[in-house]
Length: 332
Ligand code: NDP
Ligand code: GDR
Image 1 (cartoon, protein in one colour):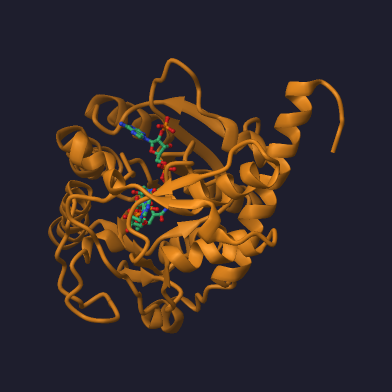
Image 2 (cartoon, protein in one colour):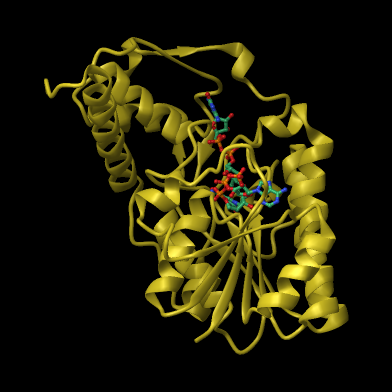
């Protein structure tokens, strides 16, 4: 039985990756940071909490990583841990760099010192392209990060390349474009909108405030994307790959798709709040996943329309259960 070690198991991708690896027969060790309240809702929703082995550790604490790798000697390590919200990275740039940047270096060091046979996956990001230097971004497009988060991810990306080239680690970097799901955190724009659609539909609120509606993102489905992570570690040679859909959609169109799903006119409910604009915006991202398709045989299976419909449906369901719970009776 192969052992996988996942940092960030309590996040969106951690939950879907755990699901995939368990279905393939892996023993899954999931590392989570110490928190006053355990953040297990995603693992609970997928019924995985009892199937994974949860261990405490923190990517900013090298000693915890050394101990865990020494204990479990994993075949595969997926470093998904991050302060992953771009907006917060301007308010907490140092914390973001400690977790998202140095955290990856700590883990690479732990691998090199304790168990260099492990295959390592680094969760790199399209945010590294930032102010894009080519209309469609590939593995060869120059980077130009626009947020402290993007800069931290670029550091961990190059550290991953560097540990591969200098220490011979089997280390891969997946440059993943935005991927969403019903398990997405509420602060990200897709889920913020689909959650608002459900609350507006059931009369719990009547407006949602957003920032820049003109920004465009290449949105895919997280469950499709974790397969690409796994595929990267099954290759003969470690390498870096762009994972994207090859289509881009504006926030404005996202709103239209989400509200249309329940036959509401989005322009009546969405307000623009200039306070939600970012100090430096990534205006547009559009990935070219040709290399992943050619070398990994990976292609996205979910269109943005399907993705947004799935997310709205799931939020409608959640709001219905919430209302039943609050009222203590079934009235819907
Ligand atoms: P989430 O924000 O949902 O999950 C992040 C995870 O990191 C959580 O489990 C969080 O734990 C954990 N974490 C935070 N701080 C620490 C720490 N100090 N030590 C250990 N764990 C910590 O992110 P996603 O699942 O969406 O993304 C997974 C990875 O992929 C992240 O690195 C993200 O930056 C990157 N990425 C994501 C993309 C996307 O579109 N989703 C695109 C490209 C890259 P807790 O829940 O307890 O806070
Ligand atoms: P992003 O995702 O920054 O691309 O990072 P997010 O959903 O936060 O923003 C996407 C775009 O939407 C615009 N926007 C808003 N965003 C948020 N969050 N809230 C709003 O109200 C709002 N209004 C407009 C933003 O300005 C931006 O242009 C995500 C994260 O998962 C990263 O960890 C990951 O690396 C990248 O995707 C790829």
